Image (tube, rainbow, N blue to C red; front, side):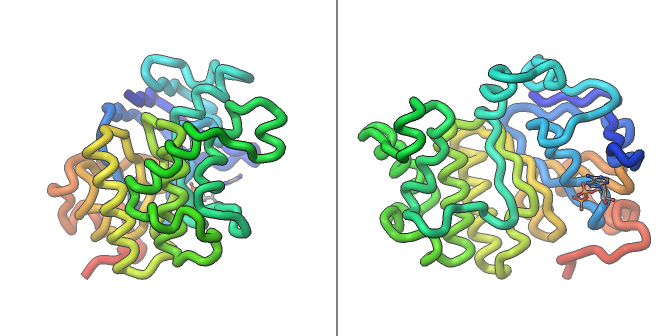
Length: 251
Ligand code: ADP
């Protein structure tokens, strides 16, 4: 369970990126975060794994005070949180399976980590994760030979190899065409339902957010202005979230 209490984030230059955030997200929820570009969506999800630090209030994950973590405890905490980016962040000149196995690097002895030597069990696990996202047949193909959608699936498989409890996804389908974007969203949904992994996804495409997420959080200028079921997001709600700006992906 992720709990924010009166949390805020002030950037070093004094800019208030998040204000008075109060949220409770249960294990297994599928949450879409929507809002204008610059509203604070990315800042919000990145506080959960401490890519950004909150500067006010409290944040706990499964009862652990996230801001108190450092060193080894922060590293092991981060391992249960997967992160997916818009740009896939793969090692493009190596195979898909090796990309997935990089998830194991933090736990490997230095020698194995340095030379990328993996055992049979690790290889099997990587293959299983590729199977879960439907690209087992691409395991031994170089990552740069894959389409954008397939590359995002590799990133997803790499995240699954960490056995995450939570996946944070920062605009994961923004670089993909509409059909591929839906396929990747289908993967997120299946993983969420089958594995009970909490998914928090920043997405500027409103229709996808409403179609896939069960809960929507709307952010405007660093503040949560909507938090509720996706099926109750009316045009009025969208107007209040996107006040003065364009609502993306609404037909
Ligand atoms: P979104 O994901 O909704 O597009 P972000 O969370 O990336 O928005 O950014 C929210 C606001 O915080 C933006 O106005 C952005 O310019 C500002 N911001 C992001 N990173 C920094 C930083 N390192 N220093 C100062 N301001 C920042």
